[in-house]
Every structure is written in C-alpha cells, then in structure tokens.
Image 1 (cartoon, protein in one colour):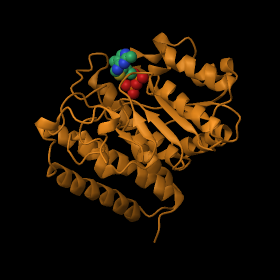
Image 2 (spheres, helix red, strand yellow):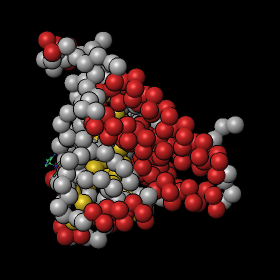
Image 3 (cartoon, helix red, strand yellow):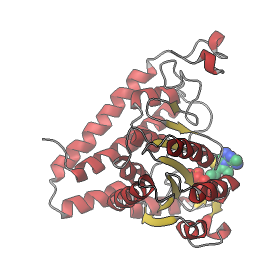
Image 4 (spheres, helix red, strand yellow):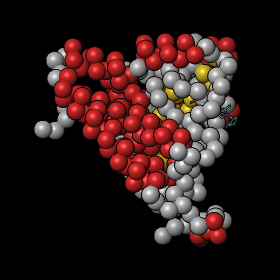
Length: 321
Ligand SMILES: Cc1ncc(C[n+]2csc(CCOP(=O)(O)OP(=O)(O)O)c2C)c(N)n1
C-alpha cells in the first residue's frame, strides 16, 4: 500500500534524520574530514519544502545543506559519497559536505554565510528573463539574514518581482550568537514588508505547517507576484559543527530542546492521535534506518579520488563528463 501524504511527510523526516545520523557515523569512522554541520532537529523544514519544489526550480543552500538537497531530489547515494569524499560522489569528492553541486536537479550550496541569496537571485533573474515558470529558493539561517547579500537580493528581487523564495531557518543561534540579541525585529519575516515583499512566519517543527506555508510562497513567486520570505523557527539539536564545545549553552538545554521540540516525535503523536497504526509508523522508521545503514556501508566501500588527480576539475573545460 502506498503512503498517504502524512505518511510521506513522516517518512521524509525519518529519511533525513537517518541521513544525518549516517553522516555522524561516517565522521566517527573518520570517513569525513573538516567541519560537519548536521541539521538534526530541523527535519520538518526540509520535508515540508519538498512537496512544493518542481524539477525546474533551483535551490541554493548553506553550510547546513543536506536536508535541502534531499528535498530537491539530489540522489542520496551520490550526496553521501560526496560528503564521504569519494570519487563516485556528486562532485567526485572534491566539493565535500559544504559544496555539493548538482546541475541535474538545480541544487547547489555555499559555505559562505549569506552568499546563497545572490546566487538564488541570479537563478530567479534568469528564469524571469527566459519567461520560465521556475522559482529560485535561497536558503539561509538567521545569521545569514543579517548579511548584506540578503538585503541586496531582496531589494532587487522585490523591485523586479522576481520568482524567488527566501527560506530562513531560524534556529535562534548563529554559532553562539542569540538571534534575540542581534535582531532589530522579533522576526525576519516582518522585514519583508520593508521590501514590498510577502513574509510568512511558520513553526519549523511542524511539517504540515511548513508544507502549507511553502506551497503558498512558491505559488506566489511562481505567479509573478514577487519574492517571499518564509521564516521557519526551529531548534538545532547538536553543536554548530561536530566538535563544537557549545560553551554558549548548557548540556541540559540541548536535551530540553530534544525532549520538547523533536519534529518527528511531535508528528508521530499527531498521526497516532488521528488514528495511524503505530506498527505502520514503526515499519516506516525501521525501513528508513535500514536503507541508510546499507547505503553508508556501500559508500564506505567506494574509492577515494586518486591524489594525483586532486587538482583536476577546477575549470569548466575539465568538468566530469
Ligand atoms: C561570510 C562568512 N562569515 C562567517 C562565516 C563563519 N560561519 C559559518 S556558519 C556561521 C553562522 C551561521 O549561522 P546561521 O546563518 O544562523 O546558520 P546556522 O548555522 O544556524 O544553520 C558563521 C558565522 C562564514 N562561513 N561565512
């Protein structure tokens, strides 16, 4: 029997969590080098945005990009292989976790905070110039919403009514900096009015609410009504990066967030209250866990790039076939 819409949302969140748990496992096995930023706690945003995205749309994400890539339909085997620096990865292991780039699905990411938005603006401008009905989604965090690039992209997109949706994942922290201490407004969404744009504020731990808001925003941008800021509030369950000593919040606070705001636990309770069979939900969870475990085992068997080839593919004429 095929999944219902709600089961699909539940499955997507579980698949995303299992993906990042596989990344943590790979890190423990020393298959990932450099910083790793996982999105545990923010699954409802990626899962909620997935439904409204079309293949022709573009998504430009951040350093915390895995769930957005999965939402856009990036092949998870190629993504995990990229994160694990394998030759069979999306960018032949040269981009790593912060710089996946997939021309097949119009997905890319940047580790430069705020820089996703000018790139999304470029996509939006191109779509409008070509008369296409695609939408560009630029993702940023609350920290990224305070950059010049955010402002510049919003000004131009609003002035030209470009098809752009800015997704702000507001987890209330930019590394150690509290949003409430540095934001001149209570929300990022309310700043949209200053640009003559639309702003939506949504509970980013509620996958149904995110799916509704995101569908509204995408339709607005696709209909030529200009850009929309969708601000989804959420909680980051782990450190900023793996290895972050988190001197800025007590351990107990991290546990409190997990206990109170886990989007998967919250959704499961809603589905069960609506009559869902707990055994069917358990089966979905088990399937997603097992699939990722098998995928990680497969990826870890893949070859690393040949060190002699490390400098290849820096220029477009050397792009992989
Ligand atoms: C231009 C730039 N400045 C600083 C950094 C270092 N840096 C990496 S992530 C980050 C904080 C980002 O916070 P936020 O946008 O809220 O995203 P989150 O990590 O919470 O997902 C900073 C300052 C960077 N990568 N790029």
